[in-house]
Length: 146
Picture 1 (tube, rainbow, N blue to C red):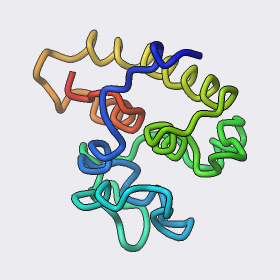
Picture 2: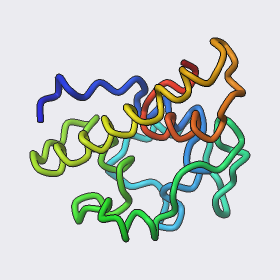
Picture 3: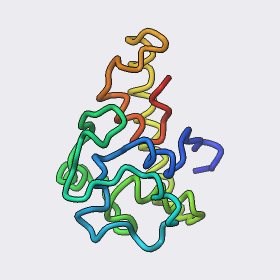
Picture 4: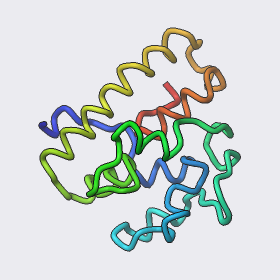
């Protein structure tokens, strides 16, 4: 799948700075992986003792838990923490054709399903409309402030 089809609106650093995954994406797995740049975490909203929805940009929990990710086959051996781990590594230049195609397809499907719902059901500029859906969009590198 071509890079031309994958145009995320936010970088991993922007996502971390805004507040994603309750600040705990890497927490149960030994903390921030060594393969990610330290500067990504300078202003990141990181929890110190477990998931904290207040650290999310919209202050709500959004998304499925890891058990669902595993049951649905969304976890790959290359990125055992899931989509965001893949996206971080992809941003840093790693390319794995099959894994990239799989994750880009998931990213596109998520945006195609959720962005139109926010646009259709929320007044322009009302960033408090559908906070869970907006938080989920943020966690998939889509601008939630559409």
